[in-house]
Every structure is written in C-alpha cells, then in structure tokens.
Image (cartoon, rainbow, N blue to C red; front, side, top):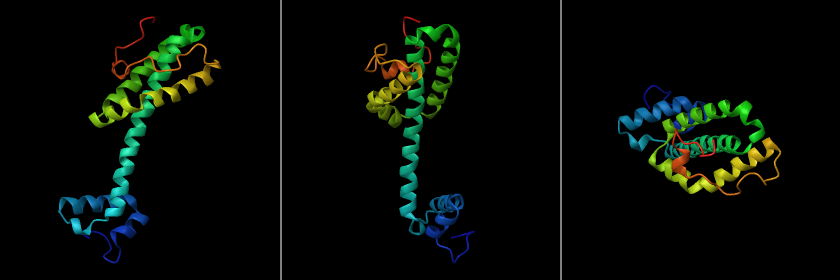
Length: 155
C-alpha cells in the first residue's frame, strides 16, 4: 500500500482509522490493485451505505406523512401550525428529492405501509388521539407524497 506504513495491513488500518482505510481503498480501486483490497470490510461498508441511504429516505418520507396527517386531521392546531407544517413538508421533500434514486424509490414503494404505520404512531402520540381521527391505512400514494405541490384536497 502506498502512503501507509508497510507493516500495517489494510484490514488493520480499518480498525485504527476508517477514513484513511477508505482513502487507501479508493487508491487501490483506481489503480486496479484488486488483489490488495480488504474485501470483507469493503463489502460491509457498501452494505452499510445501502442501509443508511434507505433509512434516510424512509425517515424523510415518514416526516412528510407526519406533517400531512397533522395538516389534514389536527384541526384544532391548523390555524397556528399549518404554515410551519407546510414549510417542513417542502424542506423534507427537497431533501428527499436530492437523495432519491430508482432503487430507493422502489424501496419506498415496497415499504410505504410500514413507513405510514410509523408516522401514524407518531402523530397519535403527538396529538394524544385514540386513532379515531386518523386513517389506519395510508391514504396517500407514493406519487402524491413525492409531489412538491401535493396537498390533500380539503386544505
């Protein structure tokens, strides 16, 4: 390995300085020195990267759903909070747009019911509702949730 103590293997470097390990791994890949790669940790890092991306877009979509539910159903707070909730939706949508890929879109599509359930649990706790007011199943399509201009008709 160039630039690293020759007594230190890439696998050992990963335990000590993962950022330097990443830099060295990139150098090896660019130089096509595949036989020197620390494949075990490289695979783990790539898997973690995929999990982080999925968690990030799911979290942003969950926040969009939360705020849409609050806008649509928490009528006693609408007058005071609707502007804030709409601004939050726009902010989360912008972040989601920057991070969304075809693969991540498919992931969200497959996980929409679960993401909705998480969002619903949050708004029920926040509003101290007993589930009577909120729909138990997702009433939004993924296309609506990903549309910056979408707001439910009754708003």
